[in-house]
Length: 240
Image 1 (cartoon, rainbow, N blue to C red):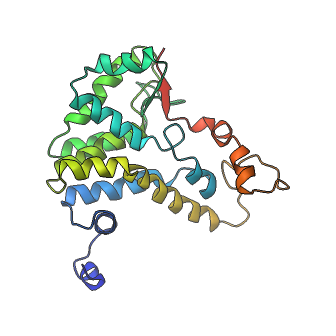
Image 2: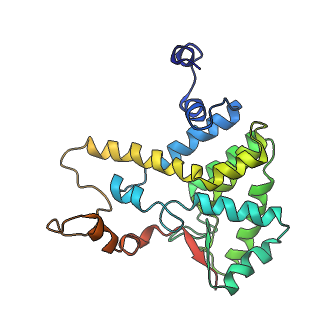
């Protein structure tokens, strides 16, 4: 599509992202969801470097792994109880489950927005229903073991890929494996970082407590335990 056509058709940011990322146009409900996700992840209160370098399954970017394990479990016929018990017995984390302060009865408003949009606009929400059934099992153990925003976005993005009638199953699997879901966090955090840069004199949030005299060579960076410095952002839980 030519750039002149983008402006002529008044295409929104979600559809521009779909053209650049997937090289195809998606249904309006799908592109609006992409734009919604960018808005929800934009204000994440972190420096660009720390925010981007720590995007992985435990620190502010559990989308890829959560999308993979939830969809894989449902596809193979695991019950929600089995989905929880298997990693529990192996003492492994469940990506997309758990929050530091939000509870079953004090939910994250971002999660509620995703759920509401999904039920009103997606052609089906069976994977979200499965994830919420898992949440019932995990919150019976501890009320902070909720489906967090990473997990909720992840299962809905997998649903978008599967239910838009635009991707083959092979393409869907490829986009999950190559990190497309965490790409939402990369772009969202970049938007937030620019906003902080435009506020001179305001202290940045979540700066790494590394002395300024420390030379940040590649070897030095490898020695910095970044995850432990940012452990307050953990987006996975080990079920007792």
